[in-house]
Image 1 (spheres, one colour):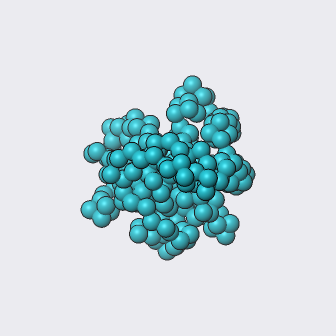
Image 2 (cartoon, rainbow, N blue to C red):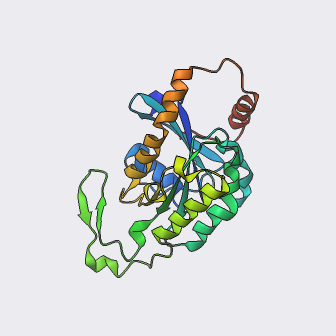
Image 3 (spheres, one colour):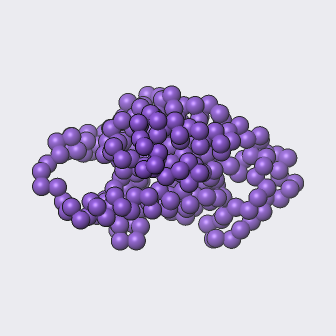
Length: 240
């Protein structure tokens, strides 16, 4: 990943969600192919991911209330937003609509949205096949199922939120992917559905990337973007 840090990203993807839903862990699982316990993100951090010939910056934002105001800055110019909740915590889904959705007002007009329910491995119905970082399929032992908790957010709840997001954006649903395609249940710990989440978002962004490359670099300076860079450099962002 370090070899990509100097390359200009083709598009920006932003991850939003309450603290402790596992945004950073999801990003680590996808970008570094491993799970690691992480501390709460301070402000924001980004990874530059090479996807074929394209470079995509993925911004991991803090879910803490004191950093909430920074969210709209990180969303500025975003081509896609991934809203993350915890499947064992219904309030974390509600927070996406109550606290985080308005932050996306600064994203691109045609911004793509995905909704991801993380920590699926903790639920009592997680006795199905899951992906590991080696690509091997494992089955959760039935003896461990009794130690798990009840799922508090169903996938249909996430799909209902996705539809409300499109209404909030006054977006024509015919021009956007269906909820069934853009709503996921994931596990950063096991890797379940993590690749599917990011790869689906990237595939949806391919037309945007190609159009942007055809148009070439902008001929004028975007003062808002320049201001963002200045604030980011002087702020608490990190590429680690």
